[in-house]
Length: 288
Image 1 (cartoon, rainbow, N blue to C red):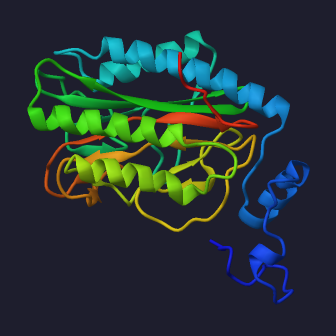
Image 2 (image 1 turned 60 degrees about the vertical axis):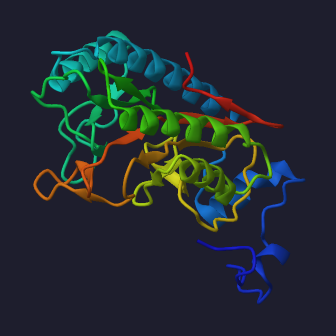
C-alpha cells in the first residue's frame, strides 16, 4: 500500500504527497485518482442508489433472521429461512459458492468462539450462546453487507461484555467518518475501546470496500495500522470489528477452510455495517 512519503507511482522521483496524492479540494478528480492509485471505486450517483437498495434489503433479511434465532433452532434452519427471504426479495445470497473452496451456504453463522465465516449446520442454539449472523445480498448487481450479534437466553458476563464491546467499537468508529479522515484513524478508535474493556481486536480479518463487488479495495483494518488513504465522498465500505474476550489470534478450520475460531476458545463478537461517505459526513446504509 503506497503511503504519502513513498516515491510516487508515476516515476517522477517526487514523494507521493507532492505528486499524485489525491487532493480533496478537487473532488471531480477523486474517482480517477483513487482508482489509479488504490484500485478504489468511487461510486457515481446511480451506483450509490443501487447499493443503498441492496443494503436496505440485506438489513431486512438480517433483522428477520435475528428474530428467528432462538433456543432449539439450528443454524441450518436459519440458512433455509435466509434462502426463502432472498427469494422473497428477489436478491442473490453473495456468500453462496463464493471463494475457494466455494462457501456452501447463503449466510455465515458464527457461534460463541467462532470469529467469522461459520458454516450453518445442524447445531441447535441453546441458552447461553452468542451468535453472529452475516448477510450479504446482491440486487441488480449491487451488494449490501451487514451482520449482527444475537444473545440466546442468559449468557455469561464475559459474553455480555464482548458483545457490548464489539457494538461500541463499531458505532464509535463510525462516528468519526467524514471526508479527509484517514483509514488508520478507524482502527485507533476501535483499539482504544477494546483495550479499555480488556478485550482484543482480531487482525487477521478486515473490513473492505463493497458495493460493485463483494470485496473491493480498500481494506479497512480494525487493528492498529498506518493506511494514510483519506476518505472521500462516494466511497462505500464495511466496518466490522471482530472483538475477542481473550487472545486476538484465530485459526481457520483445516477441513472446511472457512470457519475461524479463537485459539484460546474464548468468545468472539462482531457487528457490521456498510457505510457511505457523504459530502460532509457519512451515512449508514444497512440501518432499517
